[in-house]
Length: 179
Image (cartoon, rainbow, N blue to C red; front, side, top):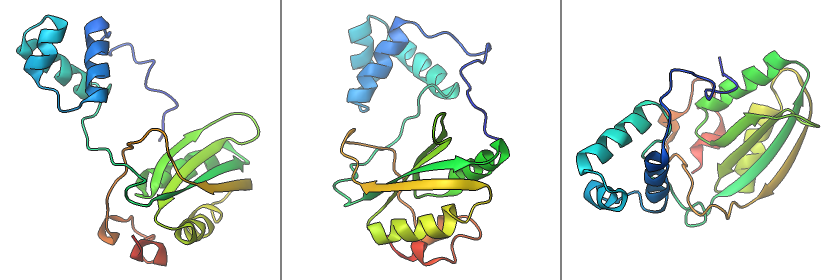
């Protein structure tokens, strides 16, 4: 089940100014050394390591390689969906968690209550994916789609994958035979 928010967890440690400083520094240079970071904050590198372990263990941050979608000629589809019932929205989001082409998915309020950003190397692949995997979902009242390119931020957590990684039921479609 997809929770609305994990931020209400009272068991999570509180972050202080040094934690936020580390996050900010790593955002701009994820390869900064523990020694460099410690010197800038005024703490030992072992304390920097402990803080980073706390941040990753509690899911405040994730260390990963982000890619530049423009360099990979990736296109995006911005999908807004109005669903009839809450459980329909949850079902759609559960399916999105498994799809490597989904960059972002979430819940909203207003005219549409589910939003999804998909990526692929061509608009045809995106159209096919939307028709086969999204429009076919139960409980959709209406859907709008816009196509474009993501320019900001420059780097995103986009998965590089092959058809073997695709969830059961999807790997038979032609979408996953194309990069």
